[in-house]
Length: 455
Image 1 (tube, helix red, strand yellow):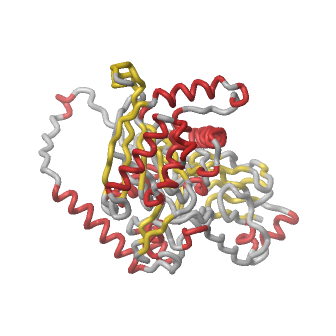
Image 2 (tube, helix red, strand yellow):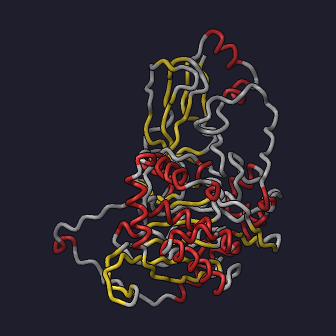
Image 3 (tube, helix red, strand yellow):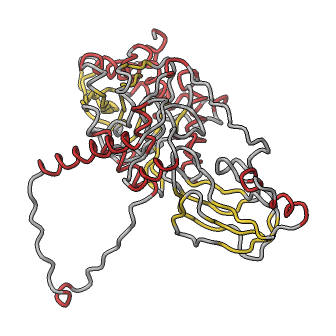
């Protein structure tokens, strides 16, 4: 018997995926949960497991095709017990994976329990986003993520509303950040689309007119080739998040240049310590630790503006986003409960996060719910920048390049290792004084690492 497998619900409010590559071909025998293909969503590249044991009959899509959730993806020739199971009225529903990469769904057809929300995040937090590099990344665009750290749960809406939102090009994740737990309606979709569209139109109208010269005839242009790349996946999500953040939160950026000679010397000492030889402790690790300590003293930088509830949600934990640039685009994987980790623990988390991001295997769950983000632009030789906030976060820190420069030191001029820090924050939540105190706390810890004993 032929059993059809439709692209399952990938979670996180995603409605389509691109086939990156097939791992099987027609005529191949496959086992239950064997990897069928790699698919790319707006969040990550994930492996799609087989819900059947049998022989591949037909591939309904080619590598590079975009496939909507619920569309036929692959057909199997199943036999014996597998065939009998496939003939049952609800067999296909039971056999389909409920989230890519998690294998076939369990036999129970009951609705899964909602994951308990933690701490002060009981109200819906605004959407998190994804951008820049672990050890390097552009800092001005971050893809969207669900509003709260509820893994594997998508925004509440009906199928017609999801289809309508897709037609209007609206990500329901961003709307869920505003409406909270209630079911999203067509009116919510219209309101969000109209608001973003009006903001974009205003920005376009205020931009100076640019006259584009007419292209010369082809015969006189010589070899002037062009390459067109479809805007999809992470790139499309990044653009949507950047526009949403830029037109929602009033950004303010502060800069501070600090002498990090003592921190760089500490890094050399830690790397020479044999007991820490298995941990890659670098500047970004110490910056991450300093940020966690400084957030404890400046809670407004670790908060969320809840427009729907008209509340400020202050988080008592730090889910730290580390911006990562990959071949697919910009993402921001999250280090959960970073404030509880030692330097070695943060170093290990960064190493694992980097390896997974570069392989393109970061799961959607690892891109959800950051409170504060760091982007390291220094590895590109850049000194400072004005990073755009991930949606839903109140702060992001850009780390510039460390340079040996003349500076005043103990009453004399000496060559010191200098670093410029740039912090952008949401001025609705964070006053200038609070943003400045946070930046000064981070700078003080990097200038004199021993001050961590006072925090």
